[in-house]
Image (cartoon, rainbow over all chains, first blue to last red; front, side):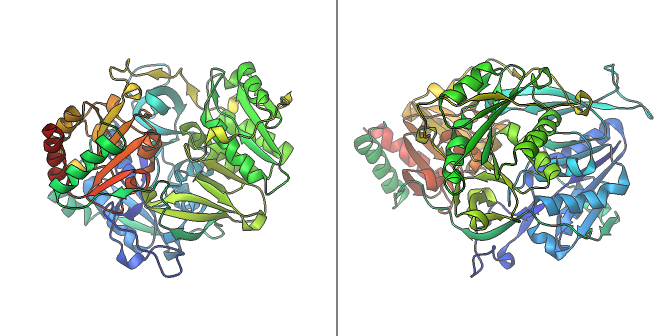
Length: 265
Length: 324
């Protein structure tokens, strides 16, 4: 099976937001980056499917030069090669542009399975995977918790050259799930927690240095569908009373208020 | 006109639909004021009557056995027809898992902008701006759909209050909509939804909850938080990453993929407050947040906040509780 995994490079979880003076975007120079966590689960799932069924895992990302960091990391964890749609304008890509850029790069590859995280920890549109499926003309399903590759009409594991399908477990809200079946090729967005992540070994890091990252130029004519006008710290919906002092002082004050003021204890 | 796509399963309305209608009513004030609802399903008599009874706007019904179990392909196929035939200025949805599964494909097929997870709207026409969280809720972005044409929007669950619905005493009309769906366009073959196991803990009934998040760093941090829950006579719960790691069972997870709770007291320990968690607990009467990061989004919904090391604060609170 030929599997593509789309990964995004996002600010680290520890990053404290700082805005540009005109508030139009964050101050990029302050940011350190990491692989979007849901995408890391998608990558892990792809690696496990390759271990089971054979084939190739190609990691894909659209972004400026700096996203090579996460591509290299994915290669170190075990991906076979990488596609990088490199363009500085992709820093701010909305779902139309981001998915359009990836679709252009993937068009000639004929992937059987395309995996993405369910959303990104930066802009958090939660759209790119589904838009990409529509652009590639393949069926999709989202928030996936389990993937079984099958031969239609049988429980047998696939052999080469057969037409294949996937039966996937999709998460619904409030503790409900659903199985559904689709023919390959297919795009799935992966829920965090579907598997346990592996980390790169020293051997993997060394091997990654020899793996190919192919640069692809951005397809012309992609138009954004939305624009960020300004960013701000969110307004508080409640007046939060901050309790200060040493741990023991703060603890005493908190317990007093919970007991006497709001009678919650 | 604003078209609101209602969500139902087995002829039972998803309550978040009412919130989307409230948001649409606020947005419609800037246009012609008309809100229209569309409901899709195999049998939707009860849902369409319930929607019509509120008198908020015409209820369009799309009914066919192909919609018995939701699939994104069938929904995209039929909604692109309905939208093309009635040309709404805005198409609105609740930001549910189901909406997230098909709305981006629908927007792409219709070549219109889709703004997701919106918490507030302002302005008219070209000046319309929509507020949505970014960077896990650390920032709020004002976003504008590009172009003068129609756009689509999903509203965050819990951002609008269903009790602010402006109803009318006159029930609205229920109208079947003509459509054709070629069943062969539906590539997903769905099975019936199911629950993994009968949940042993019903956190929705708990009056006090102590919930733990990534701040505990490792499973070794769990006993101290469990001790706090015991000292408060509270149930222990967690944010998603804790359950993903297997440190606590999934049934103790609070948030959009877990349980929604509204206890008298909710103590969030080492939880930063990603939006997926907040939607599950912001209805709690009193919220306490303990976190080392003073800018964590959890403090936006907290009544009481303590910034500091949970491994120092939690034992101090337990000691204090035992004093009395």
